[in-house]
Length: 108
Image 1 (tube, rainbow, N blue to C red):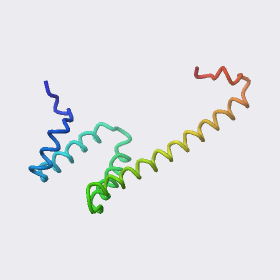
Image 2: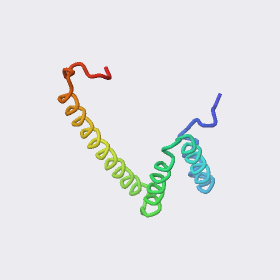
Image 3: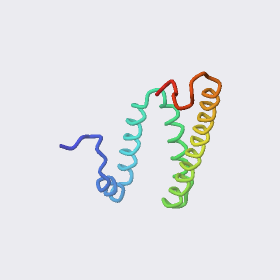
Image 4: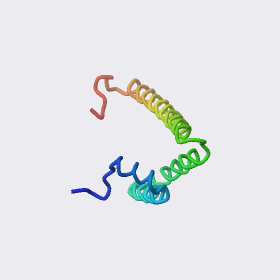
């Protein structure tokens, strides 16, 4: 049985080809429903979606929009990676300053 939230690519692609306006309405509804489930992170999700939508509008082609959005993703992953490394560095300092040996972290 098909769930309303199931994503079937062929269905979406067909709708985009035959009725772009209906596709856009359905796309916005699906995104809104997803963001509605994101709790405290909703504002961040909405900000990201606005950036994505702006990139789509400004791009000359869907392929150009994809390049811009992929670049945004890479930048965000880079930031997260740097934050993760900073957290690891801080945890290392905490372990070195504690009485526990490094192989016995308190959260293990």
